[in-house]
Amino acid sequence: MSVLSVPEPRKREFLPEEFKVTVWSRLKPYFNELLRRPIATKAILEQWIFDWNELNALVQEDVNWRYIHFSTNTSDERAGESYNYVVQQILPKVAKINHQLNQKLLEIPFCKNLEPEKYSIFLREVKNSLELFNEDNVDLQAEIKLRSKEYGKMMSQMIIDVAGNSYTIQEASNFLQEPDRNLRRHAFRSIHNRLSKNSPQLNLLFNELVDMRQQLAQNTGFENYRDYKFKALSRFDYSPEDCYDFHENIKNEIVPLLNELYKIRQDSLKLEELKPWDLNVNINGKPPLRPFKNTDELIEKSIECLAEIDPFFGECLGVMKKIGHLDLNAREGKRPGGYNMPLPLSGVPFVFMNATHSLKDVIILAHESGHAVHSFYTKNFRLNSAKQTPKEIAEFAAMTMELLAMEHWEVFFDDPLTLKDAKLQQLERVLYSMTWIALIDKFQHWVYTNPGHSDEDRKQMWLKMFHEFQPGIVNHSKLENYPEYLWQKQLHVFEVPFYFIEYGFAQLGALAIWKQYRENPKKTIDNFKNALQLGYTKSIPETYQTAGIEFNFSREYVKELAVYLQEEIQHCIYNV
Image 1: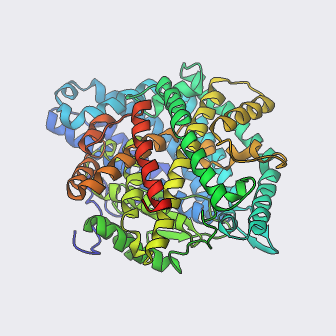
Image 2: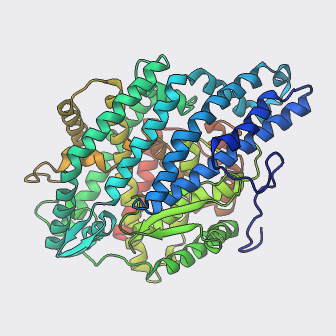
Image 3: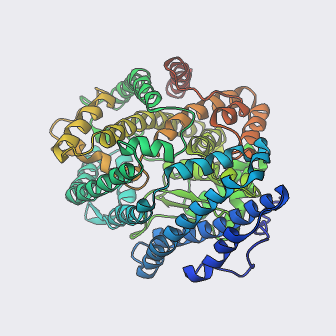
């Protein structure tokens, strides 16, 4: 692909080029044709599979666009109704007829003759879907999807008053980087006072979701939703026990390291006690970093930064800019967070985030660009399963891109000392994120393996776990009920439960790639690109191996990477 060229959408073979998803009555005949089509040879079977995948890709792209339109403006009633319609009126019918097509596929004798190298992952997903299918769950899943969407709507409408002005949560959080400690404390309290007002409402929503998810599991023969979700997420390469080990390894190896760093922070800032509002300010008390003036500059500098890693990476972001597939500014009514939305038929993804002119925006755009590059590499696969990489691979692509991009931040910071400050903030964030990932995942394991628990049970268990993963040097005294509802800030808990530990596994993989990149850039990038180009045609461990690293989260491995990270942090602090 030449610089800034826009790839053509995949040519349709089964559907008319002008066909769009509107109502089920227009979509149904194409599914029925697949159900009725006779399969007389292996070649006909393969074409049938490709036609079926094209049809599902069209449906998925339509759903994704409707979600994009809603999330960019949750106050847009038409966009909300459009998304609700497809979730309630089309997706349940698609799920039921796809179940019939799954059954048909496995009953076709030629299915046994499909090449394992090409179809093994696809067939594994089909079998898994068949085992999980329950007709009673189809409408329940649609209801869960719609109810979970309420979280984003509630959070997007929260306005925070700081020093007499109104801000979104993302914008107000920027004040936590200010040198003025009184301002930081005021902003912190304003944010959490506002969050606490919504806490009872969010608790009620979460209780509804937990109950519905537990029913989903029981309908499918599972004792609890955790075990159901592990199968639904196709977690074939690790178990819940592995997750518990990961939690302990992070607690034992990363939390003490973060505590040491926070002690340095406290001493550097000359504070008698370190409070939660002291954790985001520059460790030397300097003003917050402003790596760009506006989102246009963020995009241009990010393109340049990614191109330094590999020209193709920069081109991908350039294409998205050219066709308007970037919505980056924070604003009222916009869903919180960020995402890269794949568009499986047209091939060019869409990136959404809430930029507030901070270093965090640089990191988030690099992260979402990692997902986007992955989408570009997999867009020509004809099997949707090959494009829909498991989150352990998808987040590995994104989190690796964060650290690789950091090696070229001179694009954003021409002063060496400022650049070092920025890298220190990023590495500190990496440490903190691993403790938060382990905490949130452990919390979800407890929530869903203890159905019927009370709000008070949940609160007490959360507080117990919170303090396990919280560096002891941070003083939370006289902060009312601040820690009680912190889990409610995590969108994944409401919208995509159990999709979180993948970030932890991916962060370990990203650290290993970063270490190799600093030793041998060309070989590392070649391996990384080879891994991304696999999509989901190999297992998670095989994909990591292709990248030149291990899918490993043992205590020894965590400790090895933690020691390297500690050395790099000390270099940033002491210039050693």
